[in-house]
Structure formats: C-alpha cells, structure tokens
Image 1 (tube, rainbow, N blue to C red):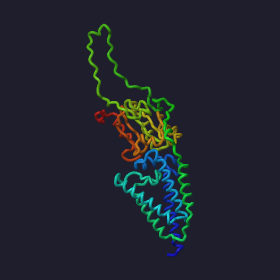
Image 2 (image 1 turned 120 degrees about the horizontal axis):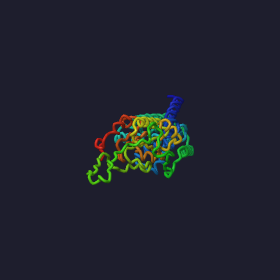
Image 3 (image 1 turned 120 degrees about the vertical axis):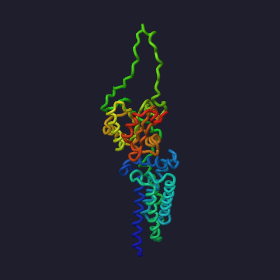
Image 4 (image 1 turned 90 degrees about the horizontal axis):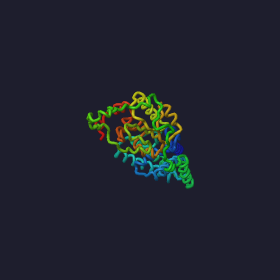
Length: 370
C-alpha cells in the first residue's frame, strides 16, 4: 500500500474515533439537545453512573468533570501529530479497554438493561451496544497505529498538556459545581390546599352526628360504647413531611417532576383530569427538580391545575426519589405508608391512571397495609 494511501486511511480513522470521543463528551453535557443543560446532564451522569460505583457526593462532581474532560481532550488530541503513537493512541485504547471491562462486569451483575451513560441521556445505549462500539473503536485505533509512520510523529509535550488542561477546565466552566448548601427548597406562593381545578375545593365529607339527648331523658338513654373500625393503616412517617407537612395524613399523592419534562407534564395533566371526576381524589403535592424552574408556570398551565410544590437541587432530588429511578415519579401514600410508586416515562413502572384508580377504593387489608 502506498504511503499516501496509508496516510489518507489513517486520517479517516483518526477523524472517526476523534468524533466518537468528542460527541460522547458533549452528549454527557446535554439533556435532549446539544449542550442544552450541562449541569443537569452531568449531575444525572453522576447519580446514574458514578454513585452506583461507590463514588461519594464529594468526589463524584470532580471525577465526572475530569473524566469527561479527558475524553474530550483525547478526541481533540487524536487530530494532531504530537506523541500520537507513543502516548495518545495507547492511552485512548487503554480507556476503551477499561470501559469494556466495566460494562462487562455491569452486564454480569445487573444484566443488559438501562442506559450505560456512554452518550449521556442524549443517545441512550445498552451496555452490550456500548461494548460493541468500544471494541470497534479499539480496532480502528490499532489499525491507525499500524498505518501511521513513526517518522511523521512530533514531540511537543506542551501540546498534550495544554489540550488536556484546557479540556478539563472547559468542563468546570460549562458545568460549574454548586455547593450543597444551595439544595434548599422553595415554597409555592399558593395556599397549601389550593388548586385551580373543576372540583369544589370547599366540599368536605359529611360526618355522622350523634343523636341529640335532652337533659330530662339522659338517665333513660343507654349509651353504647363507640366502636372504632380499623379501616385505616397505622400512621407512619414517610420522610416527606419536611417538604409537605400534611403528606402523612390520609391518602396523598406525591409527584417527582421536572418542570420542562413533557412526560411529567402529561402525568400531572392526567392526575388533574382524574381529580376533576372524583371529589374524593387524594391531594397532589409536588417536588420539583431545580432544572428550568422558570417553566413551572407553563407546567401548571399544561397540567390544568396549580398544586403545592417545593424545589430542590438535582442530586438531592435523585437521592429523595431514588438514584435508580427516572421522572416522572408518582407515589401514592396512605397515612405515610407506600401504596404504589410509579417512576419512569415508559415500561412497567410508567405512571398510568388506570392503575391508580382501583387502588383508591381498596381497603387496607386488600393493599396489605398494617
């Protein structure tokens, strides 16, 4: 094969793998569009990928930004000639091998399910799909290594260090870390019990009244002891009273939503429609993730009602909801007891009003509550 042909093929291979790394890094900073929400995307990556590996909340933000910065740097450095054969290509292959080993272990322990996070939330991939992608990339890099002539390689180490530190610094600038003190919650200005739906919010269940007894007949009336029916489960602390004080009283619904999430908006809309047809429908309270909070008015407009809500930061939100769960989340509580929890936009755990409706009329025995 002629030298010019080898160089051309090597360039094409380098461009392909470089784009793979650059797109992978940028995708980890994107939600649904390129670089639309870096902090949200990288925090999700930390919760879904790093926390499961045992990283703490202190270490994960640094590791995630450095890791993605290195990934971006390798993609850029593959397009230059300095230490390409001696350093850049071997390190890139080593990183891919580590990814393959990790994904193989993940499949052996958890199965080939969920998003591996290689392209963040922008391009979901299963672990097996990612392994195939990485093996192909390793093959392309080995081919590139063989094709590249040694004499064309240059040796300016400052090019490598500058590219690396610039990429890592760019990650910290694009997705600056937020101190945990900012993880406070906000309260809706609306009253805790106020909603704007087509139900009489002042309606209350009628309570039985005791028979009135006149004083001159009090001795002739036999008073039976009042029997309290065991119809409700024992009251427990759900852990959400910090956000909504009345959440452990009676039947309640708690929503875990993101203001700009289409699926969350539709779930809230479905709950509003159900409530409009049932005056005894449980109250709905919301915990919003602090992502695009300016869209909360639009959220309530689509939902068709305004509900009491709190806003908390992204990582505490996932800690509260469950790091292995995704929005929208809807939890049905009865006296603080978990009755049913829906926590995904698709699949068996997706919220469905048809599943909630029959649960509302079941007894505590039918729901197996104490």
